[in-house]
Structures are given as structure tokens and as C-alpha cells.
Amino acid sequence: MLGTENELLEKGYLIDVPSSSTVERHLNWDMSKDEFVKRVDQFVKNFRGTKIDSFLVNFYLKREQSNTINQWLSFAIARGVQRIDLLLQGKPYYANDTTQLKCYKFDFGLFLETNVSTLKHLCLQHCVVFPPTNRDFILPFKNLRYLSLESTEVDEMFIESILSNCLRLEEFCLCFCDLNSSSLKIVSSSLCYLKFIGCYDLSSRIFGIEVVKVQRYVNLILLDCLKLISLEYDGEGLDTLNINTPLLQRIEVSIFSQEDLNAFAALCGTFPELEIMHVTTLSMVATSLEINQPLKHLKELNFVK
Image (tube, rainbow, N blue to C red; front, side, top):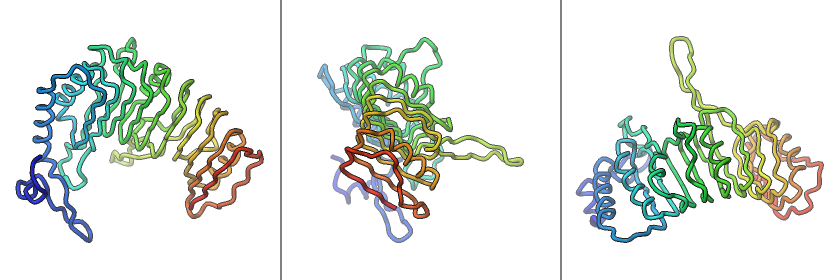
């Protein structure tokens, strides 16, 4: 333990940050990251066990610490880790150093050095996730059951590769990710739970003599998952979504326009097993939902503005 809260404040590990109406206490990223890295390194160096079930990193780290992060991951992989949570937290909102925006790039090469068939759970936050350029590369995650990507820059090809190669994947979460694409297809023979929230495409556009970053929502255009039973979707373009989920039991969806609400009503006719429906709409969207097909198994309906 580094000390009490007052001692940490005196040493500079904690700082007080003024906000609009109060003062908030936060970790001093520049001071605390070196201490954090040192202590994890000590744990890795002194660990004498031959097996690790779970490895979690939850701190403000970036690409500058790539070598260190890779060493930690290699340590866990070599010991048959089943669960990896790499929650790098991005950048403290009060920091002005723009280099902190450079996220750690997840290194798939680490998983080629040993047998990683033990990995069942992978959660990544504030990372860059692109597949290797080698076309012969096969993702070594044959036993992966759970994958969560949050605030992550991810390549569409990686998603396609995961869904086609990880035949035991049951739960997939994509939240607030830059997908480098305006549309996405989700096709899986094993997926049971899907969460797709706030994903966007951040692209460069030329306006006059300036290059401007433009952010657009990413829409699902195809959802073909015969085993899917739960869906959380926050996006647009429901009128262009082709969906095949005959076993769906629970859906939670955010609606941004009257057109999307009407499209959603039409989609509901393709959910014969639906039991739970949660719908959130903007205030200007009508609350009436006309569904032509009866939902015989519906037990719970929440409609929130």
C-alpha cells in the first residue's frame, strides 16, 4: 500500500482538479503510472506459480508502455491464462498531453509463441485492434467464448475473422468503437449474446483547404445469428437491417427517428420467441408501436423516452 489518501496527496500521486462547480480528486497519471508499472513488474518477476486463470490490468496506459504490456501478456499466456481484461482507460480527461491519445496496439504475435487454446475471455478497452497483414494468419482463439471491445479502434476484417474462426464465441460486445467502416455485418453460427452500442466511423473529409474529422454512426446491415437470444442495439438505419435471429428472446434498442421506429415495428414480426423488449426513444419520436404479428411469448415491455 502506498499510503493514506492524505499521504498520497502530499506525495503527488493524487491531485485536486477544479471542475465547473466543485473540486474533484484524481490520480496523477504522470506520477502514478511509473509506480504502477514497477509494482506489476515486481509481481511478475516474483511469481513462482505455473498457472494463471485470470489477468487484469486497469490503469491509464498507452502505446508508450507497449513493451511492458506485451511482457505482462506473454507472462500470462505462457501460464495458460483463461481470462484477459486489458482495461487501459485511455487518457485522464484533465490531461493536456496529446500523446496520451495514442492507444496501445494489441499484439497478436504474442499468441503465436505458445498454445493459447486456453483463452476463453478477452476484454479490451482503449486499444487498437487490427489483424496481422499476413493473409495466412489464423486467429489462435479457438476456445474463445467472450469478447468485449470498448472505446477501441478495430478493423472490420478483424471482426469478420473473429466471427468466422471463433466457432465457440457466445458473447460479443462492441461499445463506442471506431470501426473504420460505416456499416457492419454480423454472421455467426455460435453467437448467443450481442451488444452493439455507440460505434462510429471516424473519417477524414476535405472542406475547402481544411481536413476535418467526421464522425458517423455505424449501422448493422446484416445480423445472421441463428442461436442469438439477446440483442442490445444502439444505432441507426433499422430500415436497411436484414436480420435472421429466430430464437431471439430479449431485445434492447435505442430509436433515434420515426422511420427507425416504424422499421423496428416491422422487424418485431421476425422475433417469434421474444419475451423481453426494452425500447428507448428520443422525445420527438412517437411512443406508439404498431406490430402486425402477435408476440405470443412477450412477458416484459419497457418504453422509455
